Image (cartoon, rainbow, N blue to C red; front, side):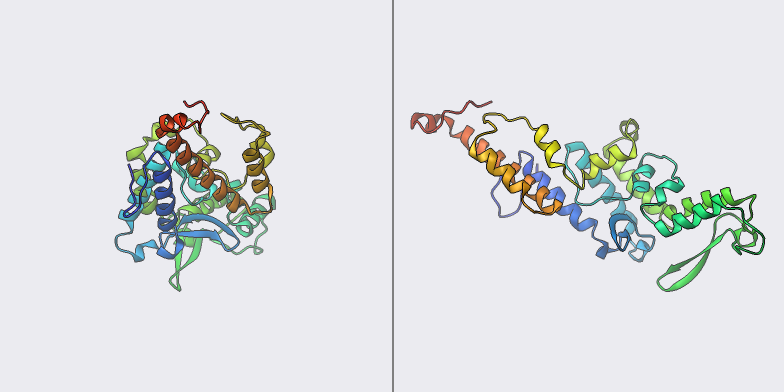
Length: 284
């Protein structure tokens, strides 16, 4: 049960949902250094390999994992979405070249070119080692033992691409991810996640980023009201206005909380209101 200090409210789900939303909004904020956006024009999140600048970062990732587990357990969403490879990692599924396209299109094109074209000698001068920048310092990371002395060739290019893809998503985040995964599985055992694929896990944790209004209408079941009632018409008119997807989702969540509160109040005072002849709705 969640209660906000100096605020009245009964936690029938809405208060806990708001608390998890606010908490996740802060803990996933890239400004705190635990996570970063996958690229400048994409706001999906990935673990920041430089999070170790905070000496307590592993404790924080353990905490983040627990919060995600609590959200899953109670059927709430967190305020943030991760990359597809992150969800696959949660399910212990291998990451493929296709997974990298939405996160790093330039690298995807480069690796695809290597696979689809014959590598001639002296054209691509690359070894099994990658340079990475950490706080302005270039460091050399070997994709395999002795990688800086192994030349990329036609014979070993498949191995190179596989190792590079793994490196791209696991670079410097092994300990952080394990801490997060441990926190998650302490609340939701990994065996309960196995039936899902990465897309379904994304829906469970973060919900959907876009809303199909027509599909929403088609699958809405009305209770204690009809589709021609003014309040129902007003609702769809508001939703169909030119709001952003984020605004639509916020409006929807707010409406749910308001309706939940009103029905709780009406149910609580049902007897008194019926005596006054003010309420004639069936209650469940």
